[in-house]
Every structure is written in C-alpha cells, then in structure tokens.
Length: 321
Ligand code: NAP
Ligand code: 8YV
Image 1 (spheres, helix red, strand yellow):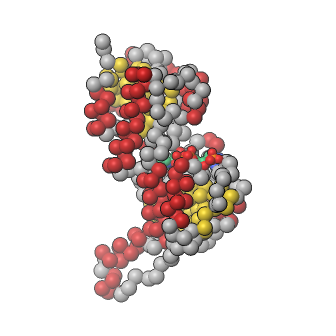
Image 2 (cartoon, protein in one colour):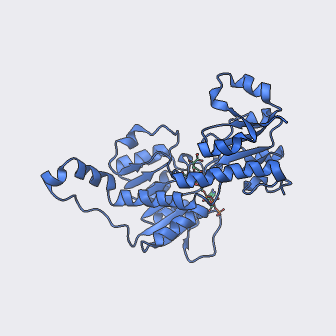
C-alpha cells in the first residue's frame, strides 16, 4: 500500500523525520516553487499537515486540501491555524500543551532577571574591560518581594507564578475567568498593570487578544514598571510599546515575541532598557524533543486508532476516540 501523504510546513527535527518517514510520504511545502500546482496535484491525497505555531496553515489550504483529516502542530499556540474552520470540516487539529510549560516559564523568569539585574550590560562591562578601567558595575534592582502580574493565568501563566513565588512575589493576575486560588484577581489588564511592578504576558495570540496590552496598560504599568512578553507579538501594541519606552512612560521590557517576526523593530534593538530574545521560549533540545514526540504521537495514533492525545478545544466536539 502506498504511504499516506503528509504536507510538512516549517522545519521538523531529525528525530521527528525518522519517526514519520516509515509511515508517510513527506512533502516539504517550502521546497516547492510552484505551490499552486503542488496543492492542486495532491489536494485529495494529502491527508495530514504537520506544522508549527509560527507557520500555522496558510490561508486557504484547509479548504483546498479536500482529503485533509488532521493537522498536527508542533507548539501549543495555534493562532495561525483557523481551528474553528478546520473543526467545521471535521478536520482534527492537535497541539503540544503542558510539555513546554516549564521551559517557557523559565524563559520568562530569565528575561525578568536579565532586565532587573542588567545581565546584558553587566556581561558587556566584564568583557569590555570596564571592570578593570572603571571599577564595579553600578547597582541594579532586586527581583525579590515584587508585585508580579500574570496576564493569562493558564498552564504557562501558573508555572510562571509558581516560580515567581520562589522570589517572595505577591501574585496578581487577569484572565478571562477568576480562579480558585489565593492570588489577587483584577478585572482588566489595565487594573492588573496598575497594581504590579512587573507584568508577564502569557495569553494566546489571535484576534481575541490583539493589542490587549495597549497604550493605557503600558501607562498603568508605569515608569518603573517592567513588561515581559512571552505570548505572541500581536498581544502587545508594539508601536505603543516603543513609544512608551522611548518617552519613559514605561520603564523596561523583556521580549521574546514580536509583531512581525522575525523582524525586530530597530528602535527596540537600540534600547538599553530592553532585553530581546528571538522567540526561544520553548527552544531547548529536551523540550523540543518532548514537543516533537507529542506532535508525532498525535499523528501516528490518529491513523492507527482514531485517537489523538491533545486536540485543541475547538475539536472537542468532533467524534474522536
Ligand atoms: P492556556 O493554558 O490556554 O492559557 C491561556 C490563558 O490566557 C488562560 O488563562 C486564559 O484565560 C487567558 N486568556 C485567553 N484569552 C484571554 C483574553 N482575551 N483576555 C485575558 N486572558 C485571556 O495556554 P498556555 O499553554 O499557557 O499558552 C499560552 C500561550 O503562550 C500560547 O497560546 C502561545 O501563544 C504562547 N507561547 C509562547 C511560547 C514562546 O516560545 N514564547 C511558547 C509556548 C507558548 P482563562 O484561564 O480564563 O481561559
Ligand atoms: C514554538 C510557541 O516556538 O508553542 C508555542 O506556541 O510559540 C513555541 O513553542 C512555536 O510553536 C514554533 O515552533
């Protein structure tokens, strides 16, 4: 029997390729100049798409791939996939929740420490010989006993909160719903920002959270406030953020995600009060291995038994085993 056709969008690890090659005929989307022809020639035969949180599934592919049964995404955030539309066509969408909670929370805490303790400047001071020439590095700020805000107290947000508590933080949050815990709940992102020293943004991306952190939220966070964004670039109004940092309305930022990735605005690149990382929230060998395993498990299991391990909520109504 010929192997099933899998459309691969984005990169996969060699471990993932090794697991999938025996079961699937892998078609690498980005290697094809003429994508139109590729899709029209294989519309009925491509039964699965493997993608990631960055690339998702380009606009009309879900509609055009008439044989498509499952989209397995390597990442938890699936704002680049129209999951409602996929579900309406009986196409299952899976993602990789939980296995990356610790890594992304570590990245958020790393950015917080780097901003407060001026890690980048201190490293430069040591490397460039300022220590010998000018003496000690200037004093920085302590992360202990801070009021810490979490915008989006979900799987990763909770994990950030647990880590922040190790720094004697008082935890505040805003989510769509209030949780049964002893953290301080606020009714809006602005109210949350007003009441904290550092604000961690960790909601999903997409239309419902676009610019949830706007000019008014940044102003409420204030001139000694710090914004850490590890969610999606779209959640923060980047123009407003740049302006707030330039004018001193907002004090500091640590950013792993940007509105037009991989483009990082030049204004941010030149700011000393900002630490930047290139969307590395989950990017360790170990965590990417767990994410890759789950991405493959979902696909392989679907074709073996009809069961998937981690469907997105939009697909919960589908007739899955
Ligand atoms: P999750 O468990 O679904 O948590 C999302 C949280 O955001 C929930 O608390 C939810 O509220 C809240 N939320 C959703 N829409 C909101 C809105 N409009 N206003 C306020 N709060 C809202 O998701 P997760 O697993 O923690 O992942 C969160 C996101 O992190 C992903 O979707 C992805 O975009 C991002 N991420 C980034 C990286 C990276 O490399 N930087 C890596 C992994 C994930 P309720 O609790 O009330 O539902
Ligand atoms: C990945 C992410 O970098 O899981 C997510 O939502 O943003 C990251 O873990 C992304 O899936 C691209 O591979």
